[in-house]
Image (tube, rainbow, N blue to C red; front, side, top):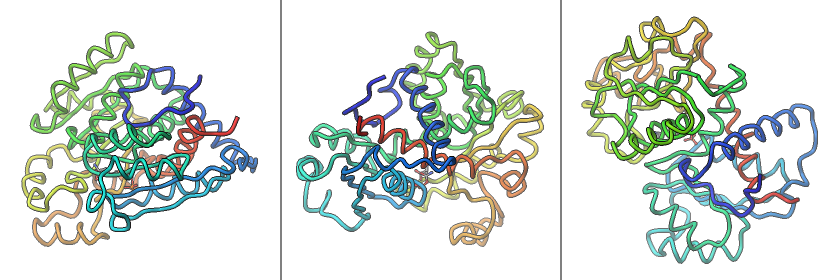
Amino acid sequence: MDLKGKNFLKMLDFTPEEINYLIDLSLKLKAEKKQGKSQKAYMAGKNIALIFEKTSTRTRCSFEVAAYDMGANVTYLDPSGSQIGKKESIADTARVLGRMYDGIEYRGFEQTKVEALAKYAGVPVWNGLTNESHPTQMIADMMTIKEHFGKLSGIKFVYMGDARYNMGNSLMVTCAKLGMDFVACTNKKYFPESWLVEKCQEIAKETGATITLTEDVESGCKDADVIYTDVWVSMGEPDEVWEERINELKPYQVNTSAFSYAKKDAKFMHCLPAFHDLNTTIGAEINKKFGIDCMEVTDEIFEGERSIVFDEAENRMHSIKAIMYATLGNA
Ligand code: CP
Ligand code: NVA
């Protein structure tokens, strides 16, 4: 499998074989790290730029630790720390950074921006999240499912909540590519866009996957292996949408009732950060305004035995290592 020099911009760009290769490479790199094997030679001498136009905990730390473990150096540009977009276009920035760095991570708003960066940079560009997609999260999520279930094909994967944004889109495409049974279980206003659903249905015909959109929680969650959710209001969306989102998505909260329809050993997943209690500024504000003490998932489920969210978070680092190594590594 040769992914050298390739960008990592969205899941639609990759074949099932390439995705499975990255998942298995992530598992191998994780095992090596647990065994204490040095990985310094894998990217020794490489320089990596990390551009974040939105905030991050997991993605930034994963890229940094992955780079350090593999012997690479990083420069972090925070949401206010560069000229990008304000004084300098993406095309110009790409051509400057491409002269200095061997690879560039970019987290921002429109997918068109990361695509433009990749077009002009001349070095691999990795999408660290856009409004439309979050591909590095996909390798970590699928790696985590494989660790817990020993397989991906045939897994019933239910996504509840806002399925028309980066996470819902990317998960639907990834499940389609990997032969999984994907269900978007939510208010129909939050179904992924129809062109993408149609595209995934075409892919599913080849891979044996199924794509289902439903507003019915009981049939949606019936015999689920994994129930997944994400925040109801994403980075970059205005505060004014909170009230509408709470009203429209409350029936699709992940709670014991949703899990009562799932398989006995079903798992809970979330890309994080999550609003499951009042220990965040936004969580406390929403509680004051709307009187609810959790949003997309209850604290009981988040903290309960089905939850594998911290395995998933750890796996961000191992999988980002695999993505960088496969596209840019030495040897
Ligand atoms: N899941 C994820 O991308 O988290 P961060 O926003 O903290 O990077
Ligand atoms: N949908 C969320 C994902 C965060 C990792 C957001 O874009 O804010």
